[in-house]
Image (cartoon, rainbow, N blue to C red; front, side, top):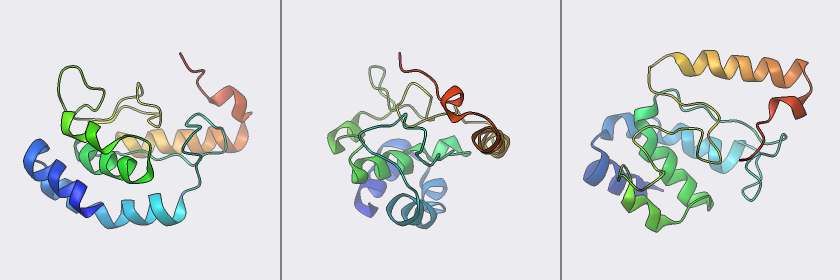
Length: 130
């Protein structure tokens, strides 16, 4: 993942410190801790990941490429007008539940999602695919 992240951060996106400061955490979560089905992004049993600092999106996209959610070749299209990989992740992407950007909003969204998942019917919580 390090090579992909370096390419994304330094050549394309220009937020290297935001990406580097979360790289270890994201590696542990995506490759050793989180439970998810890569072929079923809307599975109600998948763990959720909220990237509160949305400007670190290149790191998220690099992790997705390593896991196989997206093709590595798609990373080169980051922030291009006809590409879904925007500067901040948005819910039009399969594994994104919350659009982030304003720092600090991710915590509230994640707490609400956790509460809903624990105390309400999970089937109602899941968005239906378009």
